[in-house]
Amino acid sequence: MIGKRSLRKAASARLMKIDPELALRFCPPSSISVELTSACNIRCFCCPVGQGKIPKGRMSLSTFRQILGLLPRHIRKLDFSHRGDPTVNRAFPELVRHAQRKGYQTDLYTNGLLLDRYIDEIVECGLTTIRIDLDGASQESYARYRNGSSFERVRDNISRLVEVRAASKGGYPRNIFMICVVSTFNEDEIPEIQALARTLGVDQVLFKTAITSYGGKYYNDQAAQDDIAPKNRALARQPRAEGFVCPFLWRGAILHNGDLIMCTVDFEGEYRIGNILEENSYKRVFFGPRARAMRKRILSGTAPLCGSCGVVDENHYIPEISLTFA
Picture: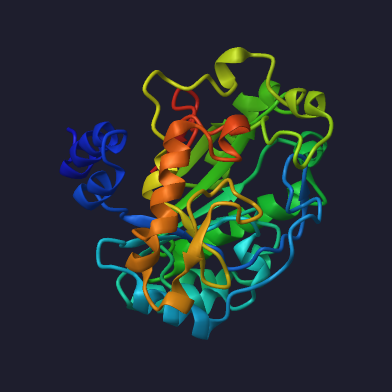
């Protein structure tokens, strides 16, 4: 059954190309990405952050509280993700706890390497959903993409988190998802990865397509990016559907310093439309003149990053091989 939000979003997408501002007022964003840090602890194959090309910064609890005080009521879900790994910010459990007290749903996306430092806090802070990357069934395949990480440590962290949640009274996080980016390094291990997820006791294992088009801004060798795509084209990222409208027009991200950017694939803030702390308003920035001008450029295909962007849908999951266990 299609929900009212989905119907409004579909109507808003049709309206977006005619009148973007009316489309967003008809169906305003219900969630937003919040960057707790721009630093990461590993060096993923195709990520500019892991290559050390992004300045490091972190969000403080006081800044986070200010930001929540400026968000409109239609935003009810916070996605703790963007350039860095949120667990690098040691204050993240307290930030999640504060958001939970304010009634927000919270979703944290992590490579999982540092989770053993925070297992009890994660279970106690009221986190709604945690998504943990584990892109392989062995250290050999996993480390080819997640350079600098440890398959065994992440696997054991997931197992421990599931165990501690089961023993808790609250049952948080409500959802523990294992995420696997399908690449040429692991496409032959999909049955083993599915079996591993079942053994670990996660609620879902979600396979997603790999992005291979960050372009020459961060990588001089496009062939190196193309080489990570799986040989099985059914598991690779497909071309955009006719009439595609970028889903990030309804999202955006708040950086650790309060900057609001239009696109969550924007690593250097090129789609920055203002700072909500400086303006003391989310709405003034989101519906302001810089935002309106940027939306026109995105919709016309003339924005600087859109030409090489690999976004084709909202989450890039592969439902045919993803599994739900709970």
